[in-house]
Length: 253
Image (cartoon, rainbow, N blue to C red):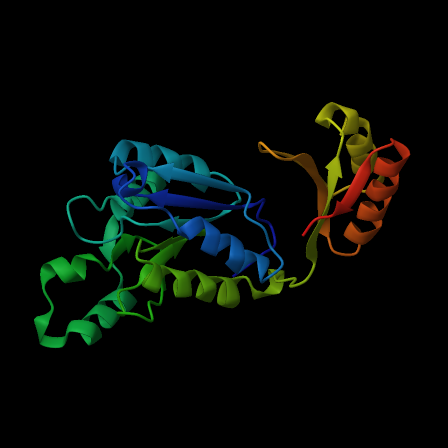
């Protein structure tokens, strides 16, 4: 499926329960881990309330990009599940019962199939299904957008399946690395020139500076992330640069 033309990888989490604080989101951490295992990174994340206009507007915007997007939640059949219809509206197509989804749902429920259960297999016309190993109620994909349930035991294996079956050619496990040092005695402003020099010398790497402050200790975590072959060389130069500026550094645990 992959044509290697996507710009970045994004995440959408739909649900009032997240924004109200009733539940804590765990999807982002799992997506980051799933991508990192395959040498990829998450670029953005957006949380949305169960508001059809907002969901539709967001999907219109993201579907107009070349981003790979994982969307969690809102694909069930209860009145507050809007994502399937919003995706169809964003695409300007109708919801239709997907034949593969119908087969999965009928296999799951047998003689207990109801119209409400079959409705969970209604996806925007032109979609592909994402198999659900937990209860056989599939998710769906359209373009590079992949829609899965909000339940972790279902959705997390589903996104791994998508990555391994449709984007396997993009995997580059071990190609991304991160390294940092702890710098004491310096303010961030005193390290800006060194950070800019590192960016100039190592295009494509990301430089980060994270101040840590407590009642007993203050320091800056200074590091680089990116190409695993460039990171060791870049962090070595950062160490030398910090020393040259007259500050002390130690390895970040």
